[in-house]
Image 1: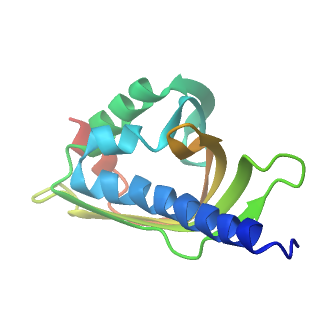
Image 2: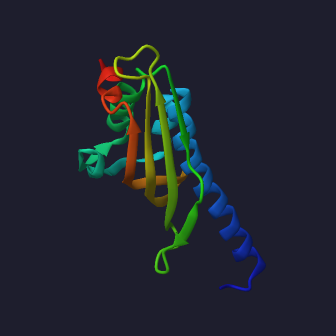
Length: 159
């Protein structure tokens, strides 16, 4: 650990910005602010939601944001909580870090057949990169622990 005050302050600022980017990701989904959502990622982002059935792949960030808008925009309401951020900086590259965070993703679709609530619980591994625009997610891995509620709700929301 550096004893240089300027370096220590910079590290604290970096941690805050990384955490805010991860929180912005969740908040953007809930607000259906797809431009804000897109701004959380590097130009090309690796997404691995394979535990939820979506194979891992690289996407241009605008394409992935559009995919999220299509898949999540149909819900009446969404609430994504992202607590317990653990930031680890790359020892070799000060412009890279990993932020592990919990995932509590609630989805509500009023009047849905089979029930109007769907919940996913798990965590994310957010690989972060410092860019000219600030810290951005360059690789996102979703770890699904369990789901409950109406498991058909995502398909109904897309329709």
